[in-house]
Length: 115
Image (cartoon, rainbow, N blue to C red; front, top):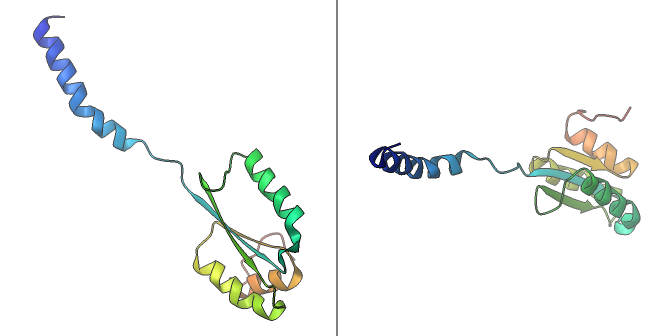
């Protein structure tokens, strides 16, 4: 390879480098909504987080979890379910029966795994 060809090759590669860098896509951020009756389900939540980490989902890196707790009673669940739906999560996890019913009603019965 001659000197001129080499300089042309290096110049072309340098010009194309930014285009290649922009072509790389970052890992998409996944969003999970969680609706629970109370915040006292902490052992289950920690196990949930651990399982997600085992699947390479890490909060703040490639995963956002939006937590909602119906601490004032089950009447609060429909409001909290609507808040979660408005965030457009990839999935909503409900912990209690009232939370599951609220999510089911809010999403128009598009709930998987619940009879």
